Length: 341
Image 1: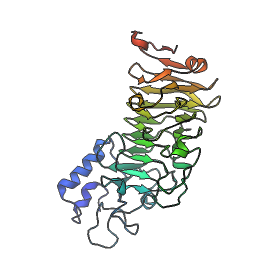
Image 2: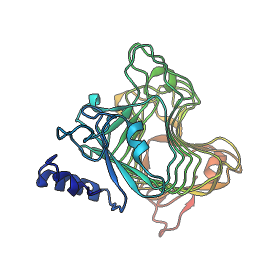
Image 3: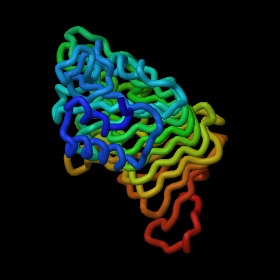
Image 4: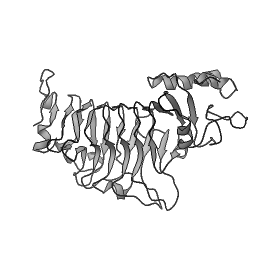
């Protein structure tokens, strides 16, 4: 059987036209593969299936798997295999996990859903089980060279569940991974959103790339000095391009970017054409400091001239000395980045 989406017409799973649409969705992610393609459908799949078809065709064992774990188990490390997560347009189609580690190299995850910039419905979220206590580390990417596209992660306690302090929605300890049109929504309950140790994204791996991603949410009020993104472990050369960082604050103490200790990062972190969004018109409090960089943090933060934010200051004196910006306050610097003041 073919390992490409065109092979799904062989057993009548989909028409040729539908198969071509799925093929195009993968192509739109800017990716082609020589690896195998498998399918996960949390609503209609069965973990006893082989995952090789996106829908059941009435043949036992043929069709998508139901859980992320079963789909991930089919992928080979280092072969550029792809797992396709099929959404149903609603939260009911979410892949449910308590915690998950994506440790395989060159193993990719694509979402099939409308490519909305926020809360895509190819979605990974906590179980809805009553009495569940949320796990602190939700989704960990320790593999290298993986592509994640058109996906949403949501970490938060629902009704009848218990939140947890120091909650981290997405941890990326691997290197050279790419996240394209992805949504990372952590601190989705009051317990995690009011704890200083909570993060939407923790980056301890280097040379990762985030393009057209939404990192954060503005539906739960954040208090205390938690951070949307923390860089740690000497991570180098991470890049954010065309990304949005929404926040709803009650006290203005949060930071978009944090390095909590010396040597937390190396070389640079670059923000290109990013918007740091604070919902002031809806009652949020303006941030006192956009960034918080430790002394001798090990690298610099670069914000290009197309970045925009709502905050009283870029940061304290230490942070400003480690932050370089282009086109500050409407001044044409001729493309030269200057130290933040």
